[in-house]
Image 1 (cartoon, helix red, strand yellow):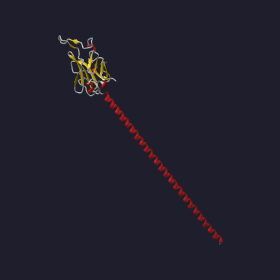
Image 2: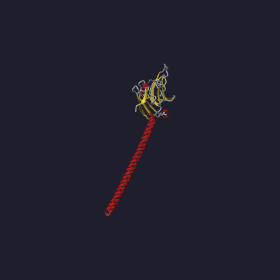
Image 3: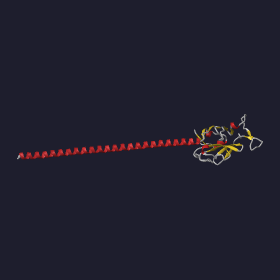
Image 4: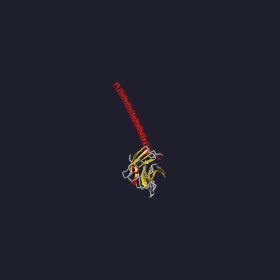
Length: 236
């Protein structure tokens, strides 16, 4: 009888131990699972924050780059506009004998040149008659038409016994629609030096309307009634 009771008590005690062991193991498993879950959540949050930071940095870099490009474009546009103003001929100055806005070398399709420096214009052929000439202010000098003392020759015209000057040294001014001409009267003709800003063609037969132009010719026609090869454009 005692042996039976002891055996029963042993079985009960063993059952209690097994139950306690299973309960402990369940608690450890639960704790391990909770810890892993927290680590996964923290890792996900860290990755998300890193991604957001990278996106913000990339966006800021793009904004800075776009700003630099915009500033560079505006600076270039300003320089181009300044250059355009400098290169455009100033008709109001030219009327006063100031050719500064034309400074440089001008060339036509015939190979003739005009060198301009401030108040002086030097022509390899001012009349299209192989006559070199120079304009200083509002006066012209054509050596081939001068006498020994440097003044214009006196020549007969239309059989008149009264001789006339071969050309007028004092230049006259003609204002036309959009351009101006300086003129020197010859016996029976006129030497014109005409200044046509970009956008103006006058009577030029063909030519580049987008550029400033000079026409120098001796003629009985209008000041700019010439073919394209007679038109001077700035070369430098």
